[in-house]
Image 1 (spheres, rainbow, N blue to C red):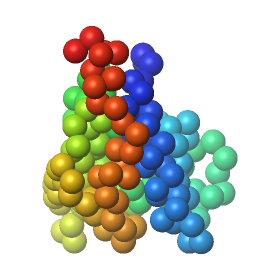
Image 2: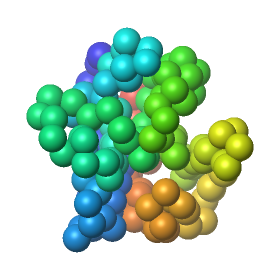
Image 3: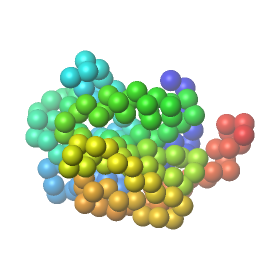
Image 4: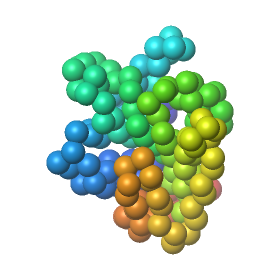
Length: 161
């Protein structure tokens, strides 16, 4: 994997920090991209950008989690298709997963896929200055928090756009 752009790293840190504040004092834990996610039913593993687990079983393992409630991927040009396609297919096999978020660091855009009561995944798109709702954690995150300190022009220059 190539180095991430500043906006990708900044958005990931912002999400991790905001979600950590949200779950403080609860059994839930927020994990950054170094924590392995084991998908046992698919004999696969991934390293999501941000993962939240409220499952006690995940607090008893040191090297991986397997029962996330929420997964968020911050998109990059080289991984966006994978994150939206095959990786999401793998994640949908996790029984505990209730929401999957895709954050575009190049635009104020967050897509949240939420599992409904029939087990179908429903898209909830958030754009511009809308507030992102994460029902799995009963919280909302303003776009201003998610994109705090993101300099869109600087990353466009760095990427040669």
